Image (cartoon, rainbow, N blue to C red; front, side, top):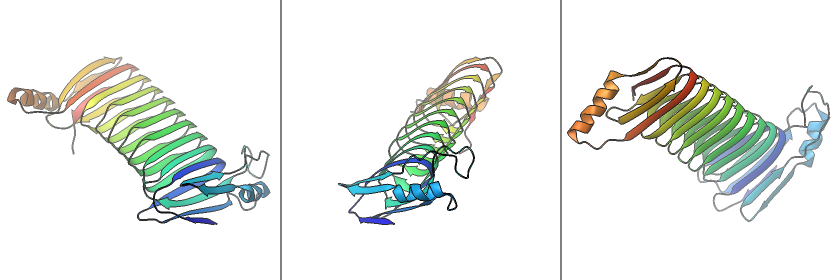
Length: 274
């Protein structure tokens, strides 16, 4: 166990070849706490890797470096010895994690999140700044991101409750679901659906070889569409009528543009329910 007293948010920089990474951002926190344990207590490589993990804190920056110890081990097919890492920091800290195979979970409110991972899911509750995830195979779940969200993954689903700025998702296979969006949304995938419950403004771009698009539009939003889809597409009459009425009355409304290019898939623009 390592503990450091601090006066405010810190920068967290973690290199963890394999295992698990759990980070908690505490409101009003005044300490940095790091706990390392073997991912598998019965695996000698994990025990050795845990003992060899380097932890340092200097000038507001926490660095954690777990060694990349190769070998067969007890778990067939695992590439590196694995460490279970638990970190506590003040809320508003920034987090950067690089891993070959480890799930990353962030509790509380952080200022920024960056994850580079070959394999391992990513989950975060609330990020006030930008989120960047680069992965070969990861499911990404973000409760709320006020900044930009950028996900580049060969495979995996993306789920976001609230996106305050632009969202960009690039994948070979995987669906994207967004609760509420206030910026531009661009999703490019060979196969995967895009669902936005409530798109308030900006441009929604969806490029896919195979996949369905569903977009909910708040009442009165001025929406324009450009569909290049191999299958059916529809815009709810209530969406068109509400936008036309807002334009006639001169009421200032949000502008939303939806641009779709798919070889196969259905497109549906509906009125947002909330």
